[in-house]
Length: 272
Ligand SMILES: NC(=O)c1ccc[n+]([C@@H]2O[C@H](COP(=O)([O-])OP(=O)(O)OC[C@H]3O[C@@H](n4cnc5c(N)ncnc54)[C@H](OP(=O)(O)O)[C@@H]3O)[C@@H](O)[C@H]2O)c1
View (spheres, rainbow, N blue to C red):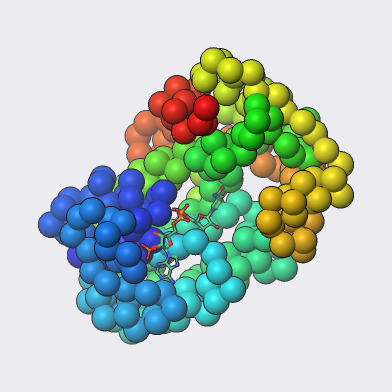
């Protein structure tokens, strides 16, 4: 059995659709949101995930982030080892490391625990998701502190495809994969591509970090997190979020989806 946590998420939903139906246990707290067969489970009660794990199973371990995520994911890794799970495939983030910014810290700590567990594993480290982009356009503008930094956004469905390839092939050597889209763009280029896809003008507005933090705080992001997000945007000028890897194609046999394809498929998501 392939046990998929985060099954209603942007990666999990696409992953479940790619796996052989009779071999999947899709874990969710919200079955109404899945619209298909599911098993109940809540990562805040790790034993509710452990109850679905049997010797030889494969586990896709992923969820959104919340303050208890590190303890929860580590506990599920321990339960997977005790159950004799054959492989854990997990979603982390590019440059994950203990002490890193935002999600990099919890992911870095979870990844360290998984590596130390002795379980066969694959750690997927994507950069930013193309699926974030519709939510970043407001009143024809994208605000950020990226400057001229390029980012190789990835379509979350390509992360799902990489996970599906790993979970259905014989278990290979444990590895960490940096997953990217096929090319990197500045946010000026992204705004131009959105403009072309939706037929309405969209511009990128670059703000100094304090102004961007204030912009996010005005939208309800807590002040500390707003400053972290804006600072991380600015650091993309020096930390590598631009380089492109061949990992998606190596794992799936086909190149990742380009930004233009995502935008033409999702033009409706950018609202009126
Ligand atoms: N967005 C980005 O640009 C980006 C970039 C790099 C890495 N990442 C990483 O990608 C991951 C998120 O993936 P995603 O976008 O597919 O997730 P998502 O769409 O945010 O989905 C979140 C899933 O997490 C599940 N979940 C949340 N709390 C849970 C709990 N207590 N117990 C069980 N399930 C729980 C939800 O399941 P139910 O509600 O159905 O139970 C939901 O299906 C995060 O680790 C994030 O750090 C994101």
